[in-house]
Amino acid sequence: MQIINPATEEIITSIEEDTIDSIHQKYELLKNGQLHWSKIALSERIAAISRFYDLLDAEKEELALTLTNEMGKPIQQSLNEINGARGRIKYFIDHSEKYLAEEWITIDGATKEKIVYEPLGVVANISAWNYPYLVGVNVFIPALIGGNAVLYKPSEYTSLTGLHIQRLLHKAGIPENCFQAVIGKGNVGAALLQLPLKGYYFTGSYKTGKSIAETVAGKLVPCQLELGGKDPLYVMDDVEDINKIADDVLEGVVYNSGQSCCAVERVYVHEKIYDAFIAAVTAACKKLKVGNPLEKGMDMGPLSRKEQPQFLLAQIKDAISKGATCVSGGNIINTKGYFLEPTILTNVNHSMDLMMEESFGPVIGIQKVKDDAEAIALMLDTAYGLTASVYSKSKERAESVMQEMNTGTVYWNCCDRVSATLPWSGRKNSGLGSTLSFQGIRTFVQPKAYHLRG
Image 1: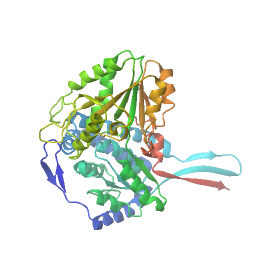
Image 2: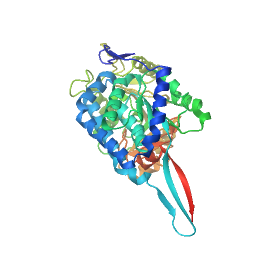
Image 3: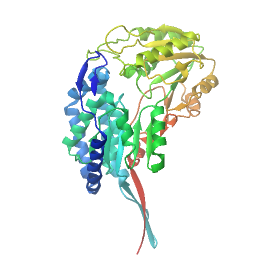
Image 4: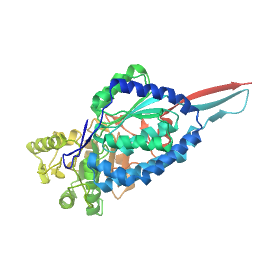
């Protein structure tokens, strides 16, 4: 399998893909190793993860360079991702003992009762390319701490990063028979679904996630899906610093080249400030630096996949054909690599694919609304339910909108952020289940109830 640099279209290297036989061999290795790993003291498992946490910091320059070369994000954003992943790992290191400890429920009377948390077994982590460290550690870190073994499939677009993760986990003391990476494209992921695993954890598109859920449903094991979004943001008319808000919103659109499940994908602005906001965000967009992601100061690198610029261009053309106005960008950049100009369209509406279908790129439609009620109705007009943002001076007014949102996360005066202390979950086509917070620790264990008399 060839690994292509999306900024230059050059072949970085070629690596061997797993076969059905090698996948089965790795599964058998993990099946035997997991039983021993589950009996190792929780404190020792956490200590191994602590060493992994330190190794990520020690090697972050090399890791960031690999990530930028194979995925395309600016080098500083790769470093940010590794640092952010370490922050999440630190949460798991500091809190797992508390939330995995046995819990005494009834200690008086003839029958005493407690809950004990046990591992699931061997689980699959089918991970994503857009944030391979961040979305990966959400799964394999608490899974390993909980006593599971992990069959880990990195995306084919970040396979070298996935192999780095495997190398560092093994170096940190996670046994080879407790964590194995499988390398390949969709056929390799499909092969994992045929194994008798005890859980399936996927990050990616709604279409693939739905297919995975349907395939493994008969196994009656956990299947958790972290899928995409069409995340709305509403700017109310009482905001004071329009230029700052325009900068915030634009960063939510273009960070990681817009390739974030919680990126801002559609914006609604109160009619009283609409013209001023459009002027501010357009001016900010034209200042963005797009180019070689290894150069310092770049706001955007290329898109990661060769087909994505044309997909986004089709959304732009569809919107323009239905009456939208392109006020900034709108073109594929004529150079080596998969580059697209950051793009803003106005005069948009919900007849356009741009406002209804996931974009996953640095493209945004901005729609004028007359009041909060219209904004709420438009924000709710979606098959997705990941995040929703409101910018307002009034906490009470913002909360009245956030309470109406059928999403796993809501933001007031911020957007496009994740916290290790809060559950990360989607509704509707944005997924099933939760990672992060104490809920994300217990996602990878199963409770056993003890009734003790005597």
